[in-house]
Amino acid sequence: MSAAVDLVWLLRRIEAWVARNHPDRLPFVRPGAEASTLQRIETKLGNALPSDIRLLYAAHDGQPEGAPALYLNQRWLPLDLVAVAWEDLCLRYGAPGELHLAARAKGGPRRQAAWSPSWLPLFGSPRGDHYCIDISPEPSERFGQVLWFLYDWPGRTAIAPNIGELLQRVADGIEAGRWRIDDGYDGLSD
Image (cartoon, rainbow, N blue to C red; front, side, top):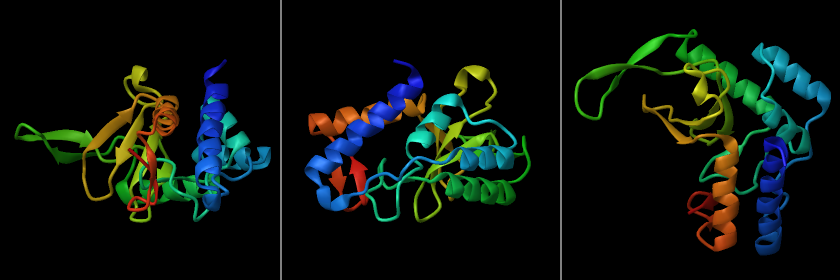
């Protein structure tokens, strides 16, 4: 099975669990994005989506409003909202390569990117936080990692090496009983 097929399969495992255990919280995901939507978003971003993300969105275009958040308090955003969030973050945080000071855990400032246009905000919370996938990072071995973007904190923690591992964490967690729908998060949580 390819990585792209795995993403769709993992999402379907999660959706099936929600359908069995919380049928009142459906629909959990939206129908797939049309090819014209995918092309329009790629044109806006000035970059092709990674093939696995493209196939995932072709299968399901994010989550509808009111669905329990896929990962903690962050809903998986439909492509049009991904583009809006990306544009907003680019306008708010500046040009590519712009660096800002951030506090180091062991004292003293270090330089860290506050935002990069190569970070694609696939998940979002009502307060403006995002989980972003890094689609063109330096160094290249970090391609695909999922970053935690908190609007009011300059640190950018990698929460998963890729979207597949994030979805795997949720799918395995709900099936093992470690994850559940948490009303405090309004979403799936451990």
